[in-house]
Image (tube, rainbow, N blue to C red; front, top):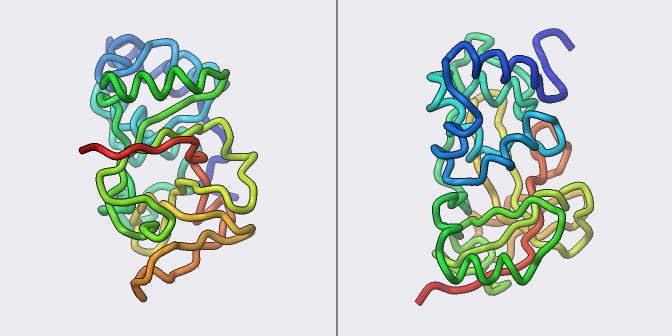
Length: 210
């Protein structure tokens, strides 16, 4: 399809990085993560997360919309509609919080070859399933293609008309995502089509901050 991109354009990322006089280490420092994580992304062994995309955009002074497009996270740029805009969602990623002792302990108990990320719950959309605002979630991004019925997942919902990106927390009941909330406004069902709605990762652990 004209004007779209299906996979990450790693060559563009490397050239842009060199042109800006920056390094992968600079991006990792900005993201508060290990350099090896970004190296995995540049070698296309892992997908670009929003946290990494934001850090790359800041370090190289590149519009976030272009970074997401080149990373294959959105299907088209611009089209006279303006850059994609994040709105408050059900969850938000916490990069620097991985230095927290509790987060480190939980993360170490799930040692594997996957890419783990820490998120925080921001809404009551999964309250009936025990997930409350400010709860921490450990998410395995590498398991997004292996999500099964009943898994609690984080997904990116992108509205191509409004250009709005929302990060949602839901239970996966293929092919849809459903809430666990008594509130009528939370009853919207998201259909996972990998274009408008894409699973980002599976929740493998959660804990409450007192």
